Amino acid sequence: MPKQRKKWILILIFFALILSMVATVPSEKSYNQWLATQYNLKCTSDTVTRDCSINGQAIEWKDKTERHLFLYKKTTDEYSTNKGNLTIKSLGIFGHYFDISSS
Image (cartoon, rainbow, N blue to C red; front, top):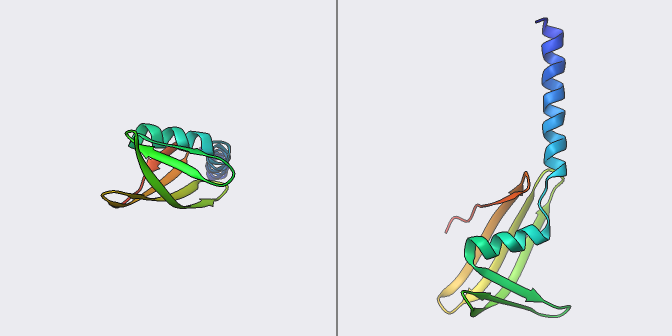
């Protein structure tokens, strides 16, 4: 296969990968479903407050940080429990969330 053709095939594959990453950044709804599945953590919110619980036990939601880039979404949630603080870090890419918490 000529070098020029290989080059164009690699460029097309690269752009297809980028396009698929952009099209499959997970939503907030999928993040909440992932929290429920991964941590058994459920939150309900209105315009002022956010009530959260793990295994039915109430916990206090403290802060949420999101970095939504066009290729992926990085989310950090902080909670206060009776056992101390809980920080959940996740990476959303290709339609799925992955736990990247160090603790």
